[in-house]
Image (tube, rainbow, N blue to C red; front, top):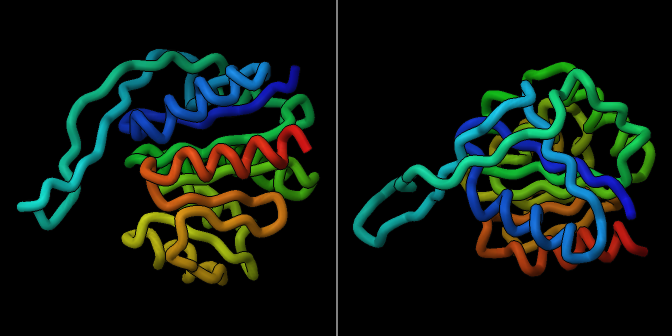
Length: 182
């Protein structure tokens, strides 16, 4: 059984989080939910109604974290999943999270990012020269740090596995699990 980090914060996207949470456990691995502090967090769900120009955000379920970023020992983990939603916008500046992401990337562990999770990868400085995908409104975050944005459901470049949104979860997690169990 491998231990996998699942990174969250308040306003993390519900489906970006819960799909990998259950999929990884279904494969027999342990999910360790990591966040700024060890406490209960509030998830949200995002939809874009046909008559709206922007994404609508509504309250979702709650999820407790198992570990605070500062307490993570990255060498204990076989991979990491960076959920989307608004949480990455705020947690990306956490130095302990950045160190963890860098260590896992540099040591060839699978690193999965969906939607706004790309903001964490960009801030950690690990996608320069990489091909990635993300939700279109985060294209700038990827390109400004030297990544190449591709508008595809899933993009795999080395050990970095990116998806656009929760609509791509099945393809994203299939690619992540292939690397994790490969």
